[in-house]
Image (cartoon, rainbow, N blue to C red; front, top):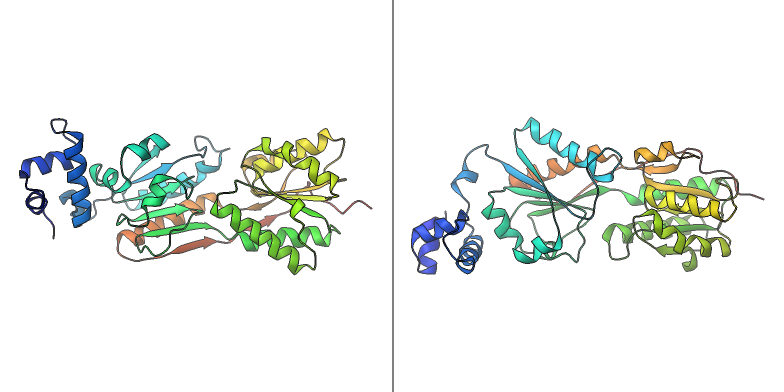
Length: 331
């Protein structure tokens, strides 16, 4: 088991200097502090506090995701995680993250310096600095909707896109829709690519031909609808599936701007089942992912990783919710 003295011997510095570096003392240089942290991580050092039985301090890093009230996507995920953590008496910190934090300090050294046993990352992309560093991390880490291969310390939690999207396509097909468009989220996202592939597979499964002009990447915000809905309408789409409820709200607004009605002229389907979905007029047909259960599942996965149980993926089932925004294809 690696000790502070072992780190000091490796670096040829005093034990007290190593202790200062590990405890973020202010009277050593930033260069020395980072050297101590990097060496401690390389040697597999764990602080005495974290070795103590039952002592668990974990964090939720959140980026590019709203989470402060129940109307927002991240809120219930965090609630679910905290509910499970409270039963185990784990201490949970929620830390909004930005690119500046990721460029000023390495992920592993941040976790060691702050005494965290593990983390749950929300809203990150595969291009983020910290996500790239997860290939080699030894810190138990769970990602939402992102996957790191070949690292037993990192797991992924999400919702089965294939099952949910196939239910939605089946619903539209049974209503007579043959020209179905799909407005996706951001292009450089694992979950966006999964949903695109799920849509294409389901279209083919139903004997239809995927049309590239009816499949577009946008962003997970309503405003992206104005850039793509006009083209969908020109190309004859009678139904538009969306990768999120927020995108769907923008699609409905854009359809109305063109003098068309939902669902009489155009059917619209969302994804997530945010509270706003049932409040819209017409209320939104959507694919529900239970966000509280996502948070609970993330804690379950992280708990396993902390205790040496390596789980790569944990996927929840989606549920298709039929409301007023879909109807028979107009003759």
